[in-house]
Each structure stands twice: as C-alpha cells, then as structure tokens.
Amino acid sequence: MKRYLRLHRPHYKETLKLGLPVIVSQLGQITVGLADNMMIGQIGITELAAASFANTLFSLPLILGMGFAMSLTPLVGRAWANHDEKAVKSLWKNGLVSNSLMAAALLLFAFLLYVTMPLMHQPEHLIPISRQYFVYIAASLLPLMVFLTGKQLFEGLSNTRTAMMIILSGNVMNIAGNYIFIYGKLGMPEMGLNGAGFSTLLARVFMALAMIIIVQKHRIFQSKYKQRISATWQQVKTIYKLGIPMGIHLFSEASAFIVAGIMMGWLGETGLAAHQIVISLSTLGFMLYQGIGVSTTIRISQLLVKGNHLLLRRASVASTQIVSVMVLVISCFFLLFSPVLPYLFTSNREVASLATNLMIVLVIFQLFDGIQIIFAGILRGMSDAKVPSMLTLFSYFGIAIPVSYLAAFKTGLGPLGIWIGFPVGLGVCATLFYFRIKKMIAGYSGTSPALIPASK
Image (cartoon, rainbow, N blue to C red; front, side, top):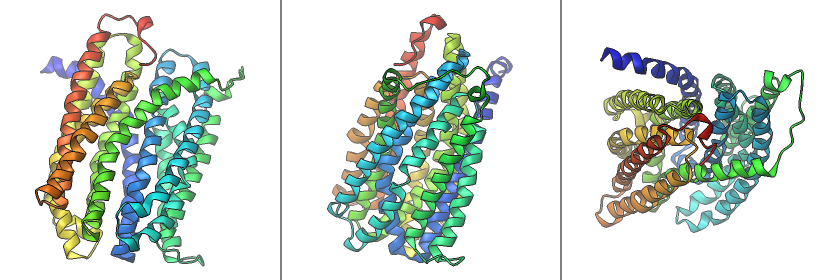
C-alpha cells in the first residue's frame, strides 16, 4: 500500500492542482444556473417550463461547440510539453479562426431549432415565451466560442486559473444582470424571462473580451522576437479533424438529456418543470467530475510526450479514484436532501414531489456519469476522438434514448421512466470507453516519444 501511494501521490496532487480551479469555475457556472432557475421560478411555473424548453434546445449547439473547442487542449498540451512556443501561437490564431467558423455554423443550427420549435409537440402557450428567450441566449454563441478558444489554450498550458477568474467575474455580472433586467431595477425595464437571457449575453461578451486581452498579454505573445503567425488551412483542418468528433461525443451525451426534456414536454408542464429542477441539480456533480476530466486531459496529453505507458496508467487510475470519492459524497448529499432541494426552485408540491422521485434515479447514474467523464478525458488527452464519438452515439442513441421511451410510454412509468434510460446509457458508454483505453495504452507501450502521433 505504501508503494502504491508513493507511485500515485504525484498524480493525485497534480490532477487536483489542475482540476480545482476548473471545479471552482464550474461551481460558479452552477451557481448562475441555479440562480437563473430560482429567479425565473419566482416569476411562475410557466416561465420556468419555458426556460427549461429553450435551455434544453440551446444545449444542442452549446455542447457541440464546447466539445469542438476542447480539441485545442491536447494539441496545445503536446506543443507546450515540447517547448514549442511558435506552435502554441499558431494554435491560438488558428483556433480563433476555427472556433469563429464553428460559431457561424452553430448560429445556423440555432436558427433551425428556433424555426422548428412549434413542431416539437410542447404546450402551445410556452412556444412564444421560449422563442423570445432563446434568441438572447443563442446570440451569445459567438462570444462564447471566442472565450472557449482562450480557455482551452490556457488549459493546454497547464493554466486553469485564468479561465476560472474570468468565468467567476462573468458569473457575478450575470447574476447582477438577472436582478436588474428580470425585475426592472436601477431604472431598467422589467424584462421577465427575457432579462435572464439578455444578462447571459452581456456576461459572455465580457468574458470574450477579457480573454482576448489576457491572452495577448501572456509572455508567449509578448516575446521580444515576435514572429508573424498566419492562419493556415492545414492547421484549421487538423483542429476540425479532432474537434468535430469531440463535439459529436459531447453532443451525443447531451442529446439524451435534451430528447428526454422534449419527451417530458409530451407528458405535461409538471414533468417538464420537475425535469428542469433535477437537471439543474445534476450539474453539481457533473461539473465537479468535468473539472477532474479536464485536468486528466491536460495530464495525459503532456505525459504522452514522455512515451511512458506506466505514467499514463497511474495518472488514469488516480483520476478515476478521485472522481469515485466525489461520486460517493455527492450521492450521499442528494439522498439526504432530496425531499428539500426541489423547494428551492418551486413552491408547487406536485412538481417538488416528482423532482424528489427523479433524484433517486439521479443518484443511481452518478457513478456511471463520473467514470465515463474521466474515461472521456483520458481519450481526449490521447487525441483519440473518432472511435469514442461512435461509441457515444451508440450508447445514447442506440441504448439510452430507446430505453427512456420504452420505460416512459410502453410500461407506464411516465417521467420516472424517461430518467431510467440515463444510467443504462452511461453504464454502457463507460464500459466501452474502458476497453478502448486499455487498447490505446497498450498501443503506446514501448513507443518512443518521437513516434507518438500528434492526433488520431
């Protein structure tokens, strides 16, 4: 045991050192999401359900964009480990071009979702309210992609604190903006639900501008011997080759929850509101696990340069163990406070009761969710994207969504049945990722650093 701890202690320490700032920023994002829903919930159940529908749809382009932007982290991590500052500069410029082009595609995607909202069989009175709110949050996609370019760049440089500070500042601005624009304070008009959307847009514009300024002041970009770096089609193509599968990976997982939200709408306003409450609470665990997943990606991408598969194994095991402890703590929290937490969002007893029941399923899938997030982080660090994206598509579209539909509408379980598909799909995904990681690490055994490919 002492030898085991001696070998793994450095990996625990480094993973937590990188992951804690990410976790803090993720918790900040959760705070904003919870504050949004609490403030919106005080307006009324109709507004809360409308926000749930709009946010559910917006998650499609949002998650796709976030996954795409993650491609920069392993590329920058590899360049940084090789002390190649010119490559880092090039990745920043080409990353901006790539993410801006992706933002344009995401805006088109968002427009198509806006147009098709009336065709999704939601309560008719929610559609106009949801559409107005959706316009504001969709407009934030471009500044968000600019911010994510810098965030992934800094993470590749083993700097997770900068993005944390910008996100926390943006969160404070967002919450203050909610208060001002939702309720019409400080002489501003009372915008209701639209005020929450407008506040989100302003906060993301601030975050994008702050990130650009800070990146340009980084010592790499202030070098005395500045070299002119131009965007090149070849590197943009490399980013897209890695980014598209990563985007599909996250998109597939998110789609299971998004389709579940749409199916909840088929069952009525109460189910949709309860679903939004539990989804909001589930982000508490998800964001914590995602923070360790991000640090795992950074660690794996940099350790690959050393060409030592034993270090890869130890770093992977350390991350998995850290998240397993987190899952235990979060699950106990949910079980203990499940009767109380829904009332932070609504005073409607029917909605709160249903949300409490859904939280039991939430506890069950926490373990699978945490483990598959870490496994995904390991594979991203290895720049392995295409196969994991296909495995994710199968797990969620081939397993999770069909199980949710059958359990909800064919067995009579209703809203509870929709949530049953989540742990099933996550469990399948985690298992498939495990065998993929074993194969990838085995492939690196005995491989010299010079022979390790830059991407898969």
